[in-house]
Image (tube, helix red, strand yellow):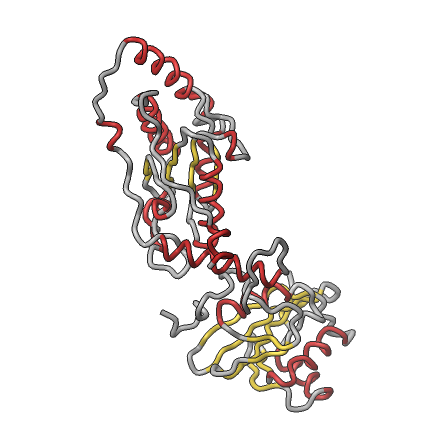
Length: 145
Length: 213
């Protein structure tokens, strides 16, 4: 079984290398600030005791007050996993892209952009994936009718 | 971004824009369902012996070799596959050969949810099928849009984009229901005559229209 990483331990490790990155810690997930997401992601992938080399899934949720992008990560080396979240402003939702670190994020970021309208800065080809070009609005937003 | 007219090659972005425009054109055109064409079934003909005999022979041939074109769009496809396999055995009716090409098929089984993005492709495949052709709408989504009838992306019934001959409701329908649908298709084939052609509607050339517009 894949073990979940203990959030407090991880937050402790993160705060040493990247101060002010963590926004909220709960039992099951860690929320980081969007401006430090890329640094955190690089740290999570490259530090030898974490080594999250696999992005299981990237998805997003619209909570009306804010939007949240969720990264589910696994380390093949240590067999542990982590749920990482980023909250962004609903009016101008912008999150740095992690395609450079995990190639598999490419299509999933496009899907999130298509359905929720979160733009991933630095994405190589941020176009609609499911809906056609010229489709108005982002259908998975709560206020879409 | 505007796409220049009368060109033979397009960049990927331009191709996407053309695709989007043609999908929206098709959606705007398909506000109403195409009425079911059953009028010809009741048409009384003064058939003479030669024609009825010829009809019988042709219809017999068509009846026992209705090759399906399986467009398995969603979960109904599993039920279609089950119908084709040995327990229900479509081969009894000479229908076991699922063609991968519309050119070789007589019956299009639309099994599953049709989205607007796919509708254009399906309409194209329908247009490529040789006459006489038949369409069977399988499952709630193909019949009326089902659960997703009011969705932003789902076609509320396949009859928005192509005329349908037989509707098989269910979510998904049991293989027995699909077989009953085939029986209904066979009944229609039996009613055909060389005196009138199978009714069709003019083909849509989406791409040409968009580039012109």
